[in-house]
Length: 96
Image (cartoon, rainbow, N blue to C red; front, side):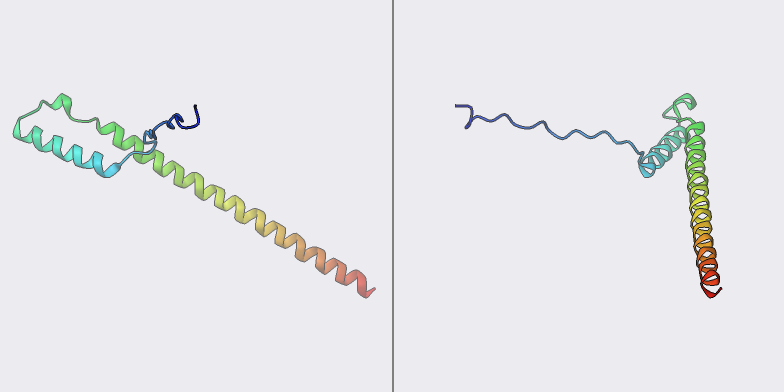
């Protein structure tokens, strides 16, 4: 009787897509402190390029998002202008 012995669903497994910047910053601080104390070598300290790249990506996303907002504003403005123009033309034609 398979009714009483149902298979259990797969367990939830989630790998983070986004990065926890706070945790990375704390790890970098810890590595820098250990380097200053002489516990680790300079080669093991995290790459500074990675943080710079992430910052550039975030800035690029903001710029891209703001460009999308400008396009939306332009299209809404053009639509409103066309509607007002059509209403004006219809009212002027009705008077004649």
